[in-house]
Length: 176
Image 1: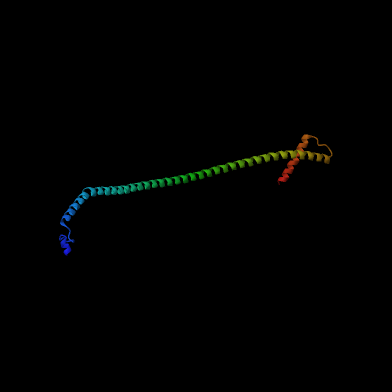
Image 2: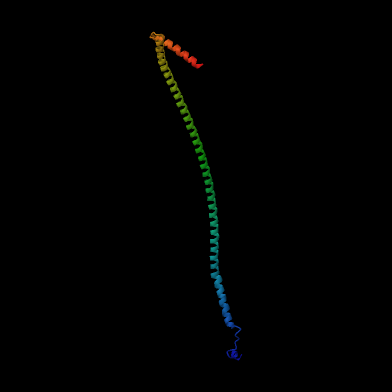
């Protein structure tokens, strides 16, 4: 304790009051400067950040809502396009079936026409062949009858009548 007393009697645990006053004045000045200039500036910066974040969130929400609306429009257009495509496909199938039926009907008509023409041609050829065969059979029959009878059956009208009667008799016998 003597060493302390020799140095001026100051207690090291208690601060010097002048230093305390200077410290309090400096602290008050620092608080005044911070409150007057720094804290408002920091508050403005924080508020700007809050506004930017909230504005960004609002813009993001608006963009999300617009994107959802566009997505719904796209889905509606896609559904409409699919419906239109299905309708076009069904119409094309119906048209194809109609064309197929038309082609089949025309083919049947053409087939019937060809068959009818063939039957007519066969009937005409048959009639021609029957006529030729009548003439030939008549000539052969007259020649054969001439040889059997021994006299000439040269009279054309008589020969023709005889041959026609003979062939008519054969046809009526064959028809029974």
